[in-house]
Length: 456
Ligand SMILES: [Cu+2]
Figure 1 (tube, rainbow, N blue to C red):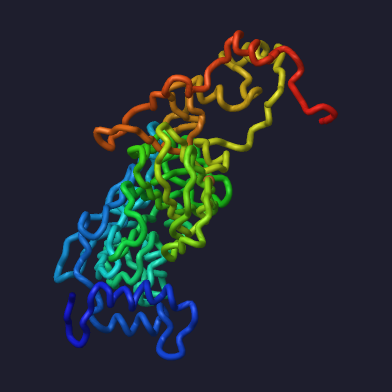
Figure 2 (figure 1 turned 90 degrees about the vertical axis):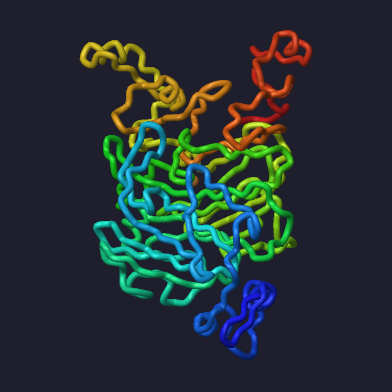
């Protein structure tokens, strides 16, 4: 309980004036400012309206940020104080590809901010960029002057200056932060991060593993070392927490654990349908908080629109290595150009030999698709990852880009990468033997079976 001049609050009282009240307030009230309106929030910010700072492992289970980090904080007079520094960062997207981006605190994307409903946060933002910037706290209900839209909500932060943002968190949800000044350039160069607000009084089953993943897309031309923020349609590096597969860390969980994955999307242009293998899930939260249980549908793919967050939950009941990836096929590639001729089915005949007299080593490629190019480990220009996939346990994994692996294990010593899954006998797809083909009446040389009477 927190008693201050003129106001006494308990956790329950705060929840009633905050999220719980909001849940009941779809019907406008007859009197007083509407919940969450500028007048309402302005009123509340004129008094000390926050609770004791929520603490990790006491008030919440901290999220795991694969390939990422959290923003440290300290408590000063019951306020959580953070410091973000916007600056240029040389970032590695995957082994073999680095580029100069704009990020926060030496990272792309910025460190994840983690706090609790009812916390008061004070966030200093130092601008070490060569241009002005701001930070918008995307999805967070706060006073208009803290909203971070350059020119509209505040003066933009000039290079070299530090601004203070301060507000009370009156909601529990998965949010983001990003520059709101010269958005195309600054978001395109990576000035983004996640901002997770845990509920003061959690509802629903407790999760064992809580992951946060921010989706993004970039244009980095082969041979260059800087994302091109002017690109509008043709992105060639697709990332989860700013890493393209095989640079993405796996999500490691123990069989039977309840898993939450928070997905945010601050890509410049594209929505991403994220598909999880081996499990079904429910979408338990959107940008604005929990989805009522009665409104949740079973899902296998969740569309994460630009500027949105989606949170999924499931029980990891199936041991194995399971892909978690964007289902747009061009988002599962690395540094693909799209301006080459379609070579599928082309028979080059004696062309290669003729061209080799002029260009030693020439080889026509692409007649059966792209996989061979990745697998052959063709020489590539310095600082580029064209077609890079990864050697898997069984064969070459031809996927790249917005792709990672959920690793579910019956036993785990730690959450470190446990390596590839050992398939129990009889549970792995393998080459069929002649005996079983004969037993099951399969003639591999006969015309492929079709339904009688069907035509193509
Ligand atoms: Cu995608």
